[in-house]
Image (cartoon, rainbow, N blue to C red; front, side):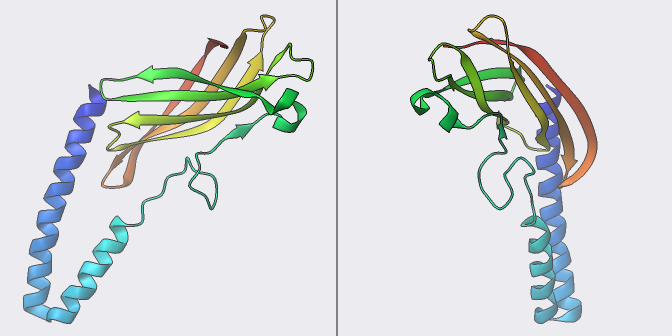
Length: 174
């Protein structure tokens, strides 16, 4: 519920900001002229367009992924994907994706890579995973996972509060 209220609060503040910007642009145009108001608008747009997502690989649109072994070292390059729900809120979901395969003998499940992301309505928050660890267990059909990250609570793009999150648990392979 907190996520929903924070998202709605962010939308309200943003709409209020837009109204203020239109009024300020009108005042700038009246006092300083059309050229100054155009420069003012481009300056405002540069702030809006400068959003970054730290959950991406550098110079890429791909989600940041933690790699554990090379797929080439596995049997036939067969791989499978597990999806684990880390946390469900009223409006969004934090999840963990684990890619795994079998060893050369085709008997042991080995984690290849993992990523964490969020889906749903995330206005005003940003999930940044910091560390993902996937361990094999004595039971070949289970993996143990540890995910550390930060939820940034933002207001108009500025981080107001950073909340540390830690998830750990077990998941079954297919």
